[in-house]
Image 1: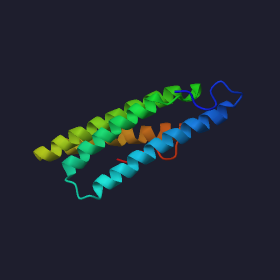
Image 2: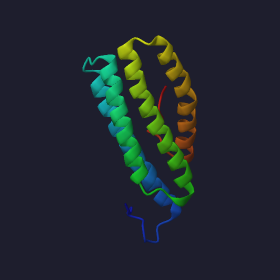
Image 3: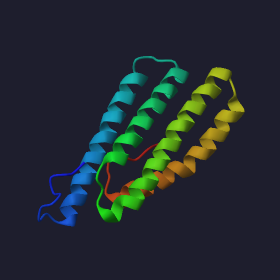
Image 4: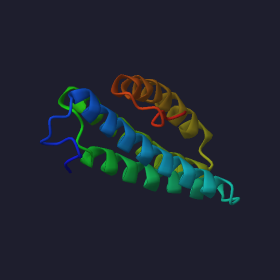
Length: 134
């Protein structure tokens, strides 16, 4: 995908702002949809499965965005983390459905460092809406 500043005399800073705006918009759409799912009284396992689906979609969308060169390594790392968090949401759904409290504890312990790293990457890329929570 080529943003409006592609091929123009626009600055790298403007290009970075466009990337951040698009990424933030994608995260806001996922957050709004997730909130709607949770407020519909869904069962926890079903909500976690939906979170997995939305996380996978977000990772795909962010991977397709044309990030400024200096943000590409951070974006790639961020996409990997979002994908991993989505997978963990699916694993948590399985653990909830199976009543596996020990596995839920392991998943929670795994999520914390991933979320902290994702927040750091989002901050470095100038993203405001893409800050996952544990």
